[in-house]
Length: 92
Picture 1 (spheres, rainbow, N blue to C red):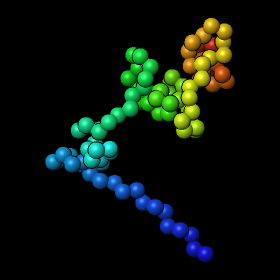
Picture 2 (picture 1 turned 90 degrees about the vertical axis):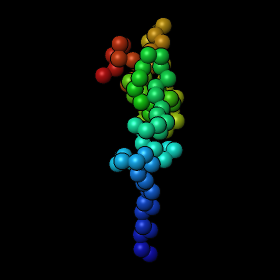
Picture 3 (picture 1 turned 180 degrees about the vertical axis):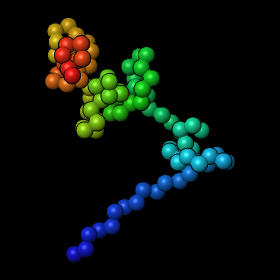
């Protein structure tokens, strides 16, 4: 049995005249209006990964759809980064 060929992703150029970037959703590139997901934490302007937050605020790229967890330190409301604690309480 021969291996199945890999499915190729269909990539299209942006529909704006003169633009050579690749289109995202809505047939336009990010520069010309394609939607961009931003982190939902107030004051943060980074790109969201999973769970509507950026990596700094607890997104885990390995588990899609994983919700960010809070720091295990008593009274702390920061999001855990590594080992169940935030950077302030020892995550490296």
